[in-house]
Image (cartoon, rainbow, N blue to C red; front, side, top):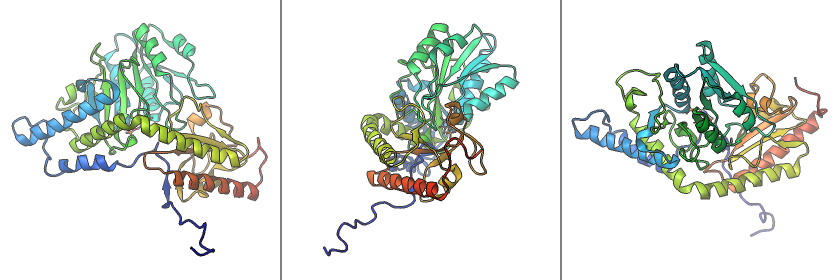
Length: 402
Ligand SMILES: *Cc1c(COP(=O)(O)O)cnc(C)c1O
């Protein structure tokens, strides 16, 4: 090796780097392989009960139901297939409001929920329901005493997400579930980010309804599931009417290919969760230490202790959110701020945890296919970009963008 090439390792990473796995994940190759036969050879409709094509499709759907149920400690018959977590959230919340009208009209949720939950609640308020939106503390966690005080005789549903899509904060589902069960209130959780990432057992957590999305756990887009407890039966009125598929809760010909992929994705998550989480937590901590070790005035948004292993959300002082986003062209991460700007919508989550308006947030979603070399590259890229922006335009902390 000649002296001038020594120490010059070839660039180990391929650009751009994808580190936005809370927005969506790539399909795992094993998932795609499982799906492929169901596009052409095994294309039958699982509702066709009179021939082999239908039976083959039905068997595949039932296997997927088992795989999904196994991930969350449910029974296969309690899984309802949907088009994704948005639909699952809509079905769970609107469905309970419709089915429990004689019992009550009050729903409790949290202000840091996904829009699929919040907008459904807002819609139901227009239809006469009452909704309590609980605040969160600086660490992103709800207060269990506040939840206890919010439950009334008219409360029919508590809906609290398993893990937040921006700050990765994991809510205390076991305590919430216990409280709901004691008070006879149904408990729903949007687990689009939590399912397959953290252990979830619907019996241990006293969950009655749980939303899952395919494309957040290395399955395909456009497919999801809603777990609906059978004992005691959680009553859910349908929002899509038709052929009476899925016990009448969700009509429409099943997306067999997507369902097979979702099932396989859940099976892989269930099997590899512990090991994958150890690896993701190590990468996340490496990224955090590399950035916090080099830059001043950087803070972690949300609890580090109660958090998804692959999530890091950092608040950078003395830097403009938009300028930071522009400077990170070769790394796919998500930018956020607590105030409006031209290209970055204000985040209701960052506002809720009290992130100051003059800070710029970056969400890192580290996933199954990210490597240590990518983490090192991203850390370096972030530090260089923030340094150069701060040199270019020194800003007073506490003053700045509106
Ligand atoms: C992505 C996401 C959704 C929406 O899921 P889709 O399957 O894309 O409809 C809902 N809730 C949370 C927390 C999410 O992260």
